[in-house]
Image (cartoon, rainbow, N blue to C red):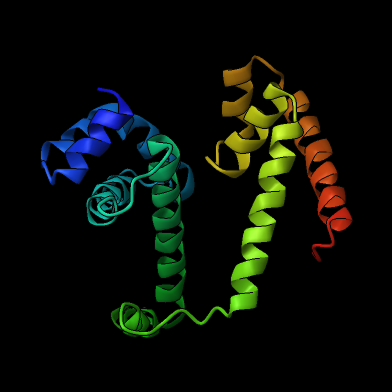
Length: 186
């Protein structure tokens, strides 16, 4: 099923939107979650939470790129799970659990300036990615967005692991210089 049709199902509040999403993107989302969590059970839970989050936010929002939209949700949820697990190690999770309960009723602590800075950073990074050759962009995004291993990237692209590492090192340096040139402090 095409993305537009899936989004239309969400907009119509048709529950088959979730099964169609799972059919089209389940493997992709599971891979993102597993690359961050390294746990099949946690990854499955994270992907299920992604479907629920998509169900809750698509109407009224209508994503331009469903794959990226879902990938971002999965990645953020997985990173939250990692953060939560680390919080549990530090204090049996009591602080994290209390903050999570209040999360929906307390406004974000970000200032307008911080939100502006974040949007500026996103814009510069997206512009930077557009300047990269396709292979370099794929390697960079697979590593730092999908959290794929060097070995996985090498297998996917047909490059050696040494080549992947070199591409990543050179690309990070180019990004650092681009951010500095744009006045973004590291």
